[in-house]
Amino acid sequence: MFTQNWGDTYYGHNISPDADSMPARRWIEQLEHYQPDLQQRVKRTVDQWNLIVRDQLRNETALRLSLESKINHPEHKPTQIPIKVVDGLPEPLIHVLRDYSEQAPTLLNEKAFADTVKGLRVANDQFSALQTLCPSQISPSDLADASGWLQRILEQLRQTDIKHRLRELNQDILGAYFFNVPRVEIYWAAIGIYAQLYSISIEGLCLVVLAHELAHAYTHWGKDIDGTTWETKDFGNADLAIVEGFAQFYTKTVCEKLAARFPAALEAYQALLQTQSPVYTEHEQWIKDHPHLKEAVRFSMIQCRSKGIVEYGDFMRVLQDVGNFPFSR
Image (cartoon, rainbow, N blue to C red; front, side, top):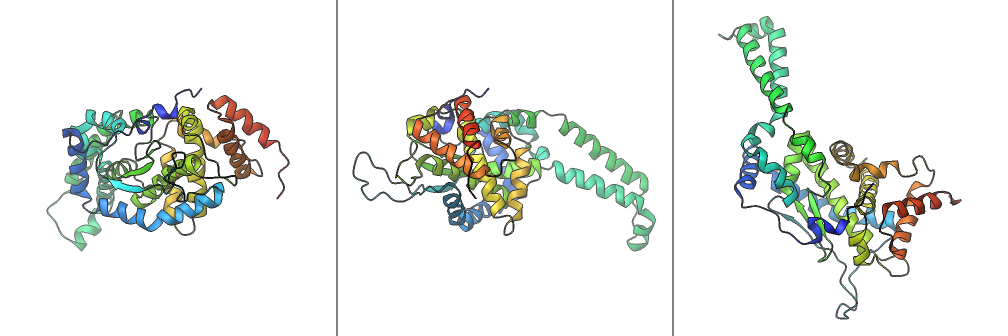
């Protein structure tokens, strides 16, 4: 079912985001026009929640990212994964967006058009009262004409296949974990585009991306109780649904843990899930309703790492076997 290797994606090759092409500039300029503080909001969210998210991932995975004391030894690498908010759009995303560059201003403001249509309808329904409140030369037919025009625009926007094409993407496009470096990048413009297209909180979506990319780092370089990590070769050769499944599973867990403090994050996770390909939703089917699901997944992850499991079918057999263990409370 899922056979594409995780390492075959762009973040397996350290490809820089596109900030200079005409399509990228078009989309980013439109974002900045309507949300001039977008980049600062993303950076502020990353700075505020970075350590908190790391603490949650450490608690949930029981894995540790710490600076290796023997970093000069050829077999040791530092595991303090750096994270940076960067300009530009990743290659898979701009590959789709370049076909809609001319429509960028309207696509990014679909919700504003929908809200305006709703407002015009309310104004038409309450026309007499509003004229008393604030007299105007506008007639009910003027409101109806404006509402009808915007409704036709909305219908045209909804006929575009941009969201269908975005759903088909099987790569992280709002952030990236470059596992051969290693480092994490957060794409503020990509987050802004998704937040606009799907009416998702910017800060909530930012935390989801932060948790997802750091989850990759923890499942890869995090040390277990024996001090071992996931071999980079096996990590890169693993099926997408294994690596993305772990990242999604722990992203959901983090968002649930932080829901009381940051409800927009869990809402963003749930909204984003509706826009993603099966690779990113498959984890929702993992031994559903198991009373000790988190421990079963964690144990299966350790088995994946230690045994070099790379095929999704093999992972699912391990997960099912682990799910049958009599976990103690």
